Length: 249
Image 1 (spheres, rainbow, N blue to C red):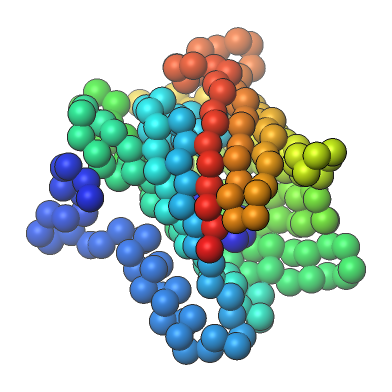
Image 2: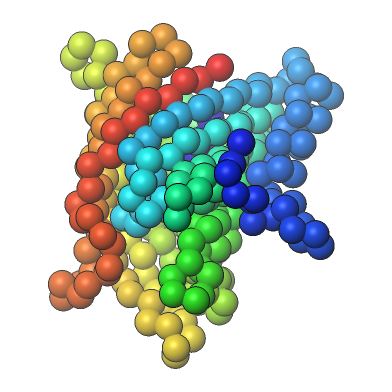
């Protein structure tokens, strides 16, 4: 994949609301896969994790989660993927996050691949009486083997009219005993935001190790975030250790 029965009703189940991007994404993946099976690849995976962290923040309120990932890759370079993240909140099992992505990858030469696309992220959380956590980003990136870099722009990062740029570098390397090490470094730059909301520039990082056993993959990672001048980000556990296992098919 490129670059991801509830006890309480899901947030989109109420009458009059549109279905989430993940449901439409699943329909698109199935339709495209049936239409041109020879030109495309459809893949899926399920995983369990002790927490789900995104840019230093816990999407799941520092609770364990189950994740369903779906991906579709076309030979033309077009791709789409999505993730549905389920966890426990206030004693009930709910969908706590949705991520949907559509993009296009084009090989420039033997080493470099250009990657452009749009991703919609919904962290279905509530801070006080205000529901937050949804944003759209357009991105441009370059992949060079085990190293990739990307810059993303959002016109509505977590709040309406909060404009941000996010730059990141990711890398991975295979080591001894079939262990794989990976790392991530990102920086969020707040360009503009409503006066009532203080958007804070920050750095986030992650280091991880994984071991694959055929279709089963075991992972552990340490991640965190920091703001210039030591300003508090209210991240909860920071840094945080996350362990998990995934199964791809």
